Image (tube, rainbow, N blue to C red; front, top):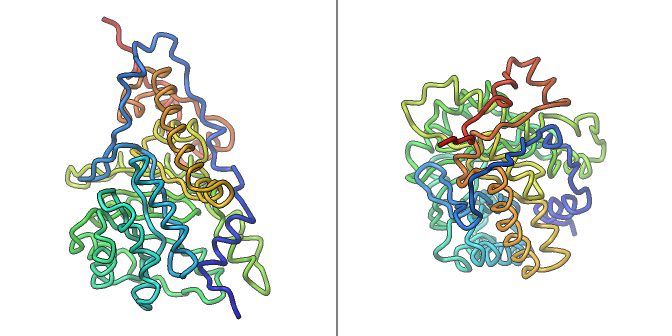
Length: 361
């Protein structure tokens, strides 16, 4: 009997792990020896569109769609509830096609009735499917994931990606909750981000290279792997910088568009660096899944709480009492990330020269 694809993805995600090449080693925060800040006054609150989050950390989309994944989503929902963070489910398309597996998604809302829960569908979804997905979870937002390369490598994957922007725009217009467009590990360049900003979405999750590698996962499932595609895409750090450039250049009618950094983020320092590059929030999936499956839900709750305390520590050291003030923290870009920026016309001196945290009275 063949293992369901959703379970194969979980298995290979844990087996293959994460490369750690998400680019944050190229990002250096500049020490502030006169921070004029107090840890007690640090707030982790942030926002995505009209949604107010108590923490910039999000349990990002992982799984659902098989009976065995219900336990994973239940435990993730408990951890999100106990730590007050938002959580996204994996693609709900399987539940729309097969109502028997809907419980593997609905359990998230059942375990966390008052928390922020994000639904999830692929870019092939229709408005009607998006409405059903939101209703299934009473979702506070809807992720639309982009996984072109994964689909192309997947033996049974899609091969036709026409009409993506039109469908996303229709969903953003009709669904009634903020729409977040999310890459799944291949990153997002400025050109793609600019196109998405015209569709009315509330946020872009850059989903960069360096975390769960869906090219490698699908190649592990193939009889004839195309392993030369395993390093396709751009790093999370680069994807954030590219998308931040798009925000500067776009004209989106004064709407506040949020960036979400995801892709291989595992520790608090990486979270702060992602925020300093312009993210309003960060999504973590693989690191949380590994803790959950190896140590249990109590260990995951402890891990998230510890990360919150560490975030406040680093923000105090930088003199940035809010997430928004981290956007003014000076950072030095080096290595491959700096080389990429030079080739793409991204001004790294602008990031190094930021002085918004220095206050002389």
